Structures are given as structure tokens and as C-alpha cells.
Figure (cartoon, one colour):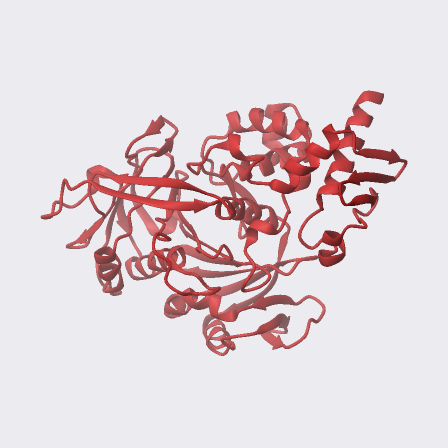
Length: 442
């Protein structure tokens, strides 16, 4: 695993003084263009206590290693904030790559002025964390996202620099999460105290399955129809401090995978945790994006669709298809490409993508997906021979037989995972060659 180094530079540390929360921003992109320290919002957070607690939860996930949680110096990463005009979205990813957190501060919790739309990192330092933890239900909270809103303190004007490693799996995890989430449906819901009792009653360790049973969520030690797998229930720990504000809990899961998402509805906001299938398993190896990345068409479409995005809170696929002049299925594949570059996320509650720009180089996408790089090498080397719906892929380890119909293969990867972690390099190579053959025949 290789790592890039991400540098955060803030003109001053974020601070909370006399009810004024100033979040320092690092370099990012806005509608107005690239910015060193973009300014997005200034106004009142009408629900101060839940907002402070949920923001602290996002920051906690960024610090966490749920698998092998020993201290690792240099793993501290600052949350990402996106201003979509009518809302602020704060995102983070755990260092172990298995938990994704997002806080959506919606229009009902914000009363102020939007200066620009875009994405940047925000400084969440130790003194700020302590101050956020002290905010009570009756405390006022004025929020400023951007340099001009920093409270003048004795530390004002001090440049803050942080350099942290960003492993490849961390970026791939952001891509996988939005693709996996887009295939999820709501599987259960609890309201009020029922949600509180359920979350507090979960075991701390092991793997359980959760399914709706009437008005309750039932926990089982085995899979049942309609259930959602929950591996490592302790990974939901950042939900617990928010329970006193919770209006409801919604559970989401896909039809054919073991990931799950847990969404707390809070006053004027939502806090969501998306968990990988196993406590030890990060999202970066799921392979959900590989089929969409394997087409040159999707790459070209992504360039067109990307130019049409304007930090919308909800990306309308039909509208994009009309504006880009391509079918909806190609727009979805293009959004996968854009997701790999950190340019879109997925909102489960609204069942829609949203636009954001993470500070990573889209030209490194192939390097971040080694299976795809190996598949293209096999295809370019002429190692794939098509035989109708079957293919033979010749490798240094011998010939592999691939079924294009169901994506199965005779290699060890397929026998180990049976498609649960995306296609193997042989299946990808066969599909690349098959698509090229169809194009030539047209």
C-alpha cells in the first residue's frame, strides 16, 4: 500500500469563543474557482447542541482505527466540508478504512448567508474539540465556515500546517462508499425512545443481523430475510452521544452485500455512519466501481457530466442526461468515475448523488485500482480469447476460464470471494475485450 501526503494549511486554528464557532478552511474548490481559504457560510445554527455533538462525532471517526486500534502517529485527518447552498455536509473516513461518517446540516438548522459553494478541509483541533463538548442545549452558536469568521484570540494569525499520509485505500474507500450506498434501500426504522433502547442494547462485539419486526428492530445471530448485517457493533459508538437528540433511526442495506448504513435524524440535521462488511475489512477492496471504470465511454462521459455539476445538493440524473445528451445509465457510470475522483457522494435519505470536490488528482485513478490496471494490461497484451459468452484469459499462472454471463472465473480470487468484492482481473479483462469487439462490429 502506498501513500500520498496531504498538506493542510490554515491561516489560524479553528476556535469557539463566546458562542462563535469559526472553522478555518484549507485549500479547496468553489464555484468561484480554486481557493486557498474559501469562505462558505456565516450565520446561526438554530440547534446548537446536536450540531456540536454531531460535528464532534465526525471528527472522532476521522481519528479512529476500529481494527487494531493502537495509536498510529500521523493518522490525524481533518474532516471535509461541502457547502451545497442550502446545507453544509461534513464528512470523514476512519483511518482503518471501514467507517464513513457524514453530518448534513440542513436548511432547518441554519439561518445565515451563503457566500459560495464548494468543498474544503476544516481544522478540528484539540481545544476546539473540548469546547464543542461543552456546548449545552441553551447555548447560542454562530457558525462561520471560512477565514473571515475566525474569532480573534491570542492565537489569531498563527499559521497552522498539518501533513498527513493519505493511503490509496482511503481514497478508494470514498469511491466505494458512494457506489455501495447507491445500491442500498431502507430496511428498518425506529422512532424516539425505541431507537435509543435498540442502540444501547446492541452487543459490543461480534456479528449480528438486524431486521424490522413490526415496530421494532430485532437482533439475530443469523441472517434472516430482509436483515442487515452488522459486524463490529462498537463501530456505531459515535451515535450514542447523539441519542438524546434523536428523532428516529433508519437502517439501510443492499440486497446482495453485507455493508450497512445507520442514519440518525436529528433536529434539522442527519448523522450517518456507513460500515464495511467486516470490522477488519475496509471499503477500498470492495471492487464495486471497477466495472464502470473499465469503459473508455464512462471516462469520456465523466468529463462531460463533470462540467455540468455546480455543487448541487441533489444531482438529478434525468436532467443531467438531457443536458449531456447521453442515456441515464451512462450518466450513472459517469458518476461512478466522478466518485472515484472524489467529486460526488451519495445521500441515502434523498436517494440521490450530491456534488463535492475532494482534493485528489483524478489522473491517479488507475493507480488506485490495481485490479483494473492489471486487467487492461492483459487486454492490451492479447491474453483474452473470446468464445461467445465464455473467454479464456492466459496468464503466467495458467489459463483462466471466464463466464461473461455471470462474471465467474476459475481463478483463486473468484473462488475465495464469489463476486462479493467485485470482479477479478480476468473477468475485467474479458469484459474490456468483449466491449471492444462490440464497438468494432458496429
